[in-house]
Length: 434
Image (cartoon, rainbow, N blue to C red; front, top):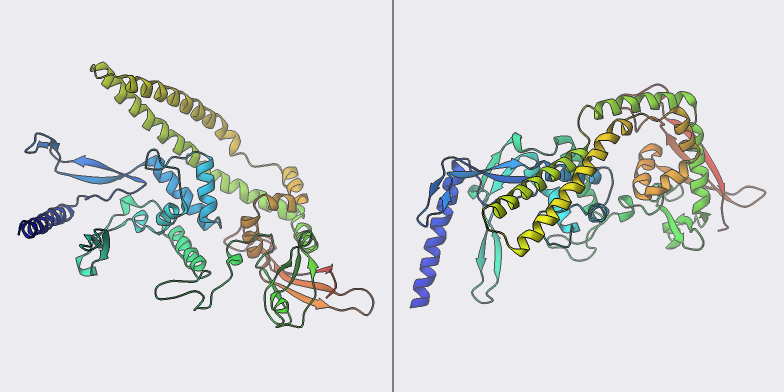
């Protein structure tokens, strides 16, 4: 009987708590919606509760500049073709702190939740689910609630991600998700799935080449040396095109055609003009790194002031003294880093000279291979689909003829620029035997 009464009391307490939270939401306040990128601030009149603790009328969300810059960086990096694990690796290598103190750093699951959260476009949905304890196992589980119980708040002042960037990220998330098996009610490879190489290429031309005989993908089918490209269906005995070609040869010939097209001084001069325009636009606002470092410096300064106040009030301890010394050192380091960023800001936004661009174009393959995955996605946009046609001459070994569309300024202009008409190029390269 006591157990029954306890359960009834808990149910009544849960209803009263939910009713109070709904009342706060209808008044425009936030209720336990802590999200990376935002901070809750007390608003209204401060009153003392029954236990003598100060309580405001409510709390509202405000944007945290340091965390907001990190969120925007994550969205831009993923939209530009970087993988979630690659973003995690960069954040952890740079020592960028998350919300939780003492954690092991960022994880792919955390980055994925950031990319899926609608709060960053100003749409806050509350009361979507509830947590109940299973009486048999004692474990707590989440159960979804009907949409009629949801409380949706649209607030443009809390938007961190522009709409176009949000749509690009959601589209890419859907494309990446379609390359993996599983899903609601699915087991294994029940549905047709795409290849992961479409979004995470391992080589510069991965996922770009197709066989002209069967229309299948031309991929690396042999790992000897630098590897050999060949028709995937032929490797599975479903196509007659058994011709193989060295990966290094395909990349060298294709990039040579791109380099010849880019090396025109007219194209480089036009490209340099557009770079100057973009840099002038970017320099009108503080760089992302400068804003992040400034917000982090201000946060550590506030923390240092709080520690000093504790010591001044006679509440010092050994642990507090150690924390004070560590915070002072951290503030000094951040101040020097901030000064370095400010001094280098003017130099960082100077457009490179034309000779520098010509030298980089001459070493095109070396520059692209520094970030293979992102460079491969850019080449895919530039070249389009590369059709590999096997050719068997009367004399000599068989080879591939690669046909593609090359639009040099497609990655620079929104509107077509001068000489931006697609050009057909043929890349011939000798390959291994069938």
